Length: 121
Image 1: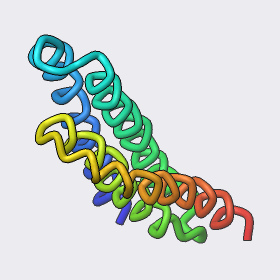
Image 2: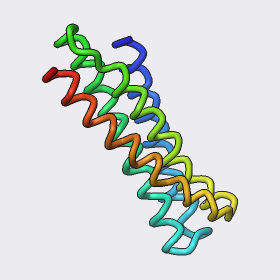
Image 3: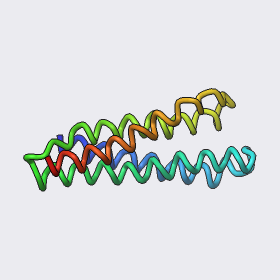
C-alpha cells in the first residue's frame, strides 16, 4: 500500500499544482474574488493532504507494524469531498455542495488522528 499512497499523493499534488495554476491564470478574471478564494482553499488543502499521503507512505515503510492505511484512505476521501465540494461550485455555481465540505474536513482530521493512533497503539 505504500506505493499506492505515495502515488496517490504525487497525483494529488500534480493535480493541485495544475489547478492552482489554472485558478491563478484562467479563473481570476472569471470568478468573483470570493469564489476565487474558495477555489484557492480547495487547492491549498488538497496540497496539504497530498503531502499527508506522502507521509502515510513514508510512515508505513518506516513503521510497518503501524497500520496507516485508514489514514491514507481518509486523506483521499477528504480531498475528494472537501476540495471537490469547493471546486464544483466555482465551476458550476452549485453552492449547495458547500454543505458537504465539513465532512471532508472531518475526514482530514480523522486521517491525522489515525496516523497518531496507529503509531502509538
